[in-house]
Length: 162
Image (cartoon, rainbow, N blue to C red; front, side, top):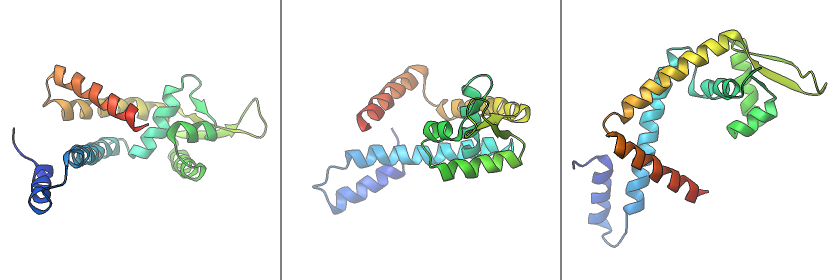
């Protein structure tokens, strides 16, 4: 097994503060670095479709919701764990691009719906395929059994984190 940048950091801490148990630092340091590298790769992938990762999140949430691919802004806010202001900015940008449309709710005069347009559906359907290809390429160094093991370990860690 070869060392990486995190190993060098841990070696420095071991030299300077040998009494510290840095196991967690190593694990989370790698998680953060993987998240950054994979996030950059996904941003580049989605950029080919003229959208950001944030845009993809909104479009994908609408697409996964099923026909008619429409949700209220508050449903989007809850699904994406954002503030209402964060959703408004994303929806504004996507509406200007013609990928979503706002319309009054047919069941509640006070509510709006954000609906995926045909152009938005085309973009998200292509982007999700490209994104999965990028993710598979990032995992290609691990054999299938190790990927399944990693998936289980990360699921356990996420559950423990709350």
